[in-house]
Amino acid sequence: MLLVSGVNCLAAGLSLLGLCSYVLLYTALLKPRTTQNIVVGGVAGAIPPLVGAAAATGHIGLGGWWLFALVMVWTPAHFWALALLLREDYRAVGIPMLPVVKGPVVTARAISRYGWATVLLSGFGILALPTGGLFYGLMLLPYNNRLLQLVHRLAADPDSLTNAKGLFRWSILYLFGICLLLILSRSALAAHLDQQMIALMMQMGVG
Image 1: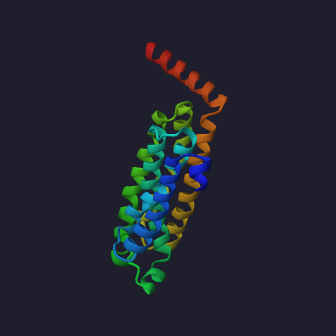
Image 2: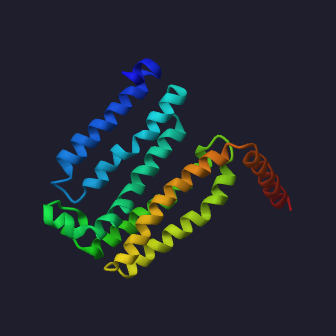
Image 3: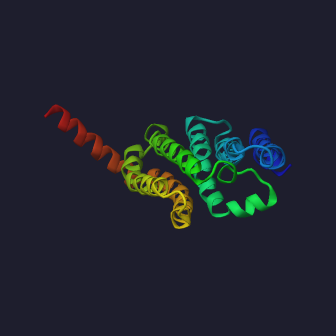
């Protein structure tokens, strides 16, 4: 009711969709039944960027859909790293998380696939952002490099709880870092740096 009266019906509808998909689709239906629960359930966690886009502009543009997709592919690697740490707890209560059913090796491989998907999709922000795309892309490199480093470290030793904990912690900081870069990319400094980088690339192309 607050979103309908104070924002718009699209934002309200998306918020309700996110709530219902998390509570009903993910928690009640998928979580106790399938190892892929977090893959489909990641849709619920990825809806907030759509709500924000709808609230800010009244529609969902390229940037909103890009953030939705990025959070959705980021979620499995993030959550399966946590599930590796808590797999005995999940086993005790009968929740078929991937590490419980398939084991750490298969889980680490799945994390690796989604980790690479996250890195590749994060790069599309260069095109999705209205300003500061090149600045964002440049600053993104160390974030992605660290993410892949931790993913590969876990793949090399899937039974290591230390590796799983390190990846889980970085995955949280990673998403915070992406959000920070999105804010910084809209600054006048980022726009100015973009113009300088474009001019430099043009000069190098001519040369």
